Structure formats: C-alpha cells, structure tokens
Length: 161
Image 1 (tube, one colour):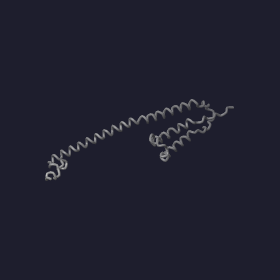
Image 2 (cartoon, rainbow, N blue to C red):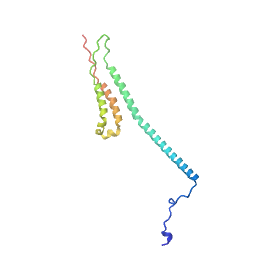
Image 3 (cartoon, helix red, strand yellow):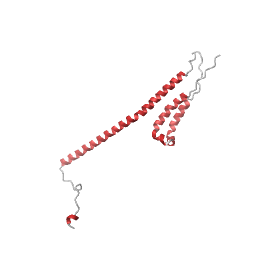
Image 4 (cartoon, rainbow, N blue to C red):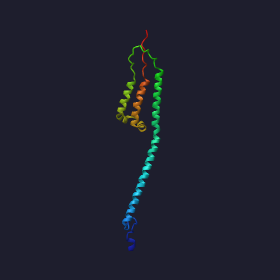
C-alpha cells in the first residue's frame, strides 16, 4: 500500500475556518442574528395562525351552547307564563308559595359541578374525550335550574266560598 492510500482524507467541514478579520466576524454574527430573528418571526406567525384557526373552528360549539341555553330559557319562561294562574285580586291575602323543585335541581347541579373533579375519571371515556371538565361544569350549572323550572309544580288555588 502506498502512503497516499493509508493517509486519512480530510473532511471539508472539519477543516478549521480561515482566520477572519474582526469586521468579518461581526458581519457574520449580525447575519446569524438576522436569520434567527426571521426564524422566530416565522414560527410566531405560524403559531398565531394556528391559534386563530383553532379558535375560529372551536368557537361554533360555544356559540351554539349559548344560543341553545338562551332558547331553552325563553321557551321555559314562555311556557310558565302560558300556564300561570290568573292574577289574584289585590285585596286577597298572599299565600305562601308552593313547594317547587327548582331549588332542589339548582342545588343538585351545583353539588354535581363541585364533585365533577372526583367523578370525572368514572365517566365513560367517550364523554371525557368529547367534553372538557369546564364545559361539563358550566352545563350542569346552567341546565339544572332550567330542569327545575320544567318540573315546577303549579300553585294550588284556595277554594272560593
């Protein structure tokens, strides 16, 4: 074998860089800073676009939930006004309001919303994937009193003599 064949070949990246002047080193450092700033700006723009896109994509669910709650509340108020007893004359003594389930449903909803962190692991996996604990807590807090209004007992009228 020849000495030329046994000598290791020099890799171009491993060669030491030629000596640069101070001005060249400063210019190179400035170019690296500019390139880094451009990368940061590009990544920040990409992140902002992703956040904007996901916010717009997921905003529909919140809007629909809000509209559904407003519609259900309006419908229950309309139902309760339609089925309400005619107003009593002003001279008649006021009776104690009849027992309603509204406060029981409200208390049950608030209790379940408070226990939700404990109950969350026991819920089916599909529910946990589709709904966040915050959404479930909000739904329980808003829907429970509405269900109580739905099951409200009608006031009993005093027998007239």
